[in-house]
Length: 346
Image 1 (tube, rainbow, N blue to C red):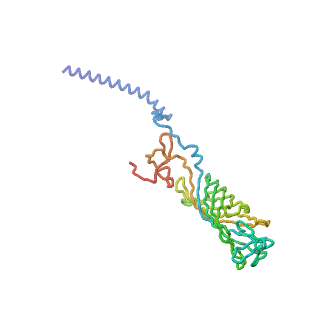
Image 2: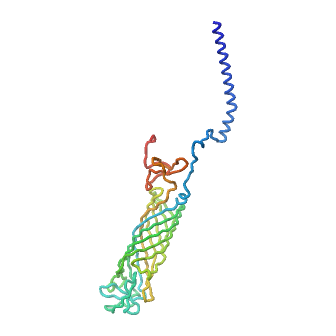
Image 3: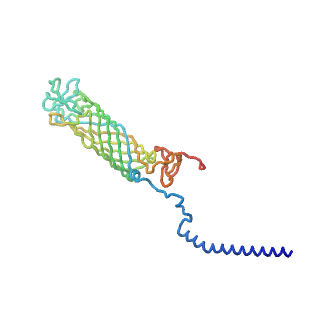
């Protein structure tokens, strides 16, 4: 019994000494460590050096993509109608039965053919009747069909746009009708009606209104044009043209827009009549409706990992990428996935 009691007393004594010793160590750690922990929290330093485990992201994109993100490349076509008219001032009209009307100045022995686009000379003996001094009160009016194919480039800064373009345009001339004496003078039909028009221009525009998904931009194009093939370029001198229109755009995605643009154009040209010292001045205004699209280069490159299904802008390693799963022609909010919804656990 005495041995048992003595053993118990020794065990309790040893246990008490161990507990006191450990408590003193814990107290020392708390006294020394707590100020260091508070200091670390105050300075905002990571207690674990994460920079040793994670790459530093390179936010943004390359200089090339940042420089081009506000440039928009476009292609369009459409249909237009040109309204041509000219005065016969200084000319008489010679009409032969069953033939197009011809012009003359001082004598009917020298007459001019194809006086719309390629004035030639007819010296055959005159016959039939002559409408003398008709130019004082006769005008001819006609029309043409225009179908353009154009490429454009413009820069957007907020609501302002600056750019230019180039187009190649099919132009087919119709009949020219006399405004008076139609019972004596027949319609003028040119011998070569179809040709092409080459044009280039500069553009300035301003976006002034948005309605739901549609943006309205008023713009002015100023440029030069040249009529080819069916026009005698040695005789024809075109004017500078001014084109006023409203572009109505709708975004299909961040990068792709479709648009329709009704416009009216003011221009003219003069046709030098050979060996006469005179010219015919034509008004050549046009009403046109164009349809097309514009595309801008994305600021971020497409994700390089083929298996990546992220729909939002994201990064791998130290590079930022855009999604590779949604098509460029479909609307996609870069902040969250909306094209391919799925359960969160997947």
